[in-house]
Image (cartoon, rainbow, N blue to C red):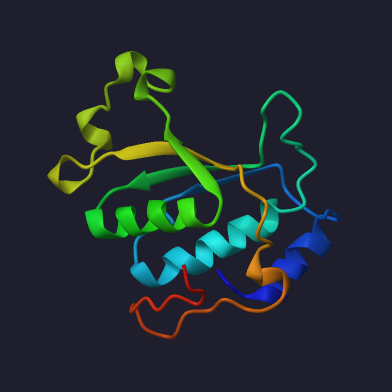
Length: 148
């Protein structure tokens, strides 16, 4: 996450300027990946063909996340909001029978994967990754690359 050369390679390989939908699961575990991940997702969605004028549709990041640490989840959703994303939790009833997670699918401590939809509703500030890398150190310490 956060490597501009990788971003440009992905765009070249798929022969497109932007994605309409990105799906990710279990990618928010360490504070140091939160910002580079969101910058990468925003840059991939930025040139999406989905136009906000068409039936209220927006480029979307569908994310499965296990909230192992509340502080990291809070940091993720706050930064996403600051970067122009609107998030909503998808009710479990839409993808699980009766909305109940079987015990064998739960993590230690009963934690479950929750599904969120993050839509890029504000495209007023271009993604910084179209200009430069957003790689945050070699440790798990999170240092914001851009001020908010």
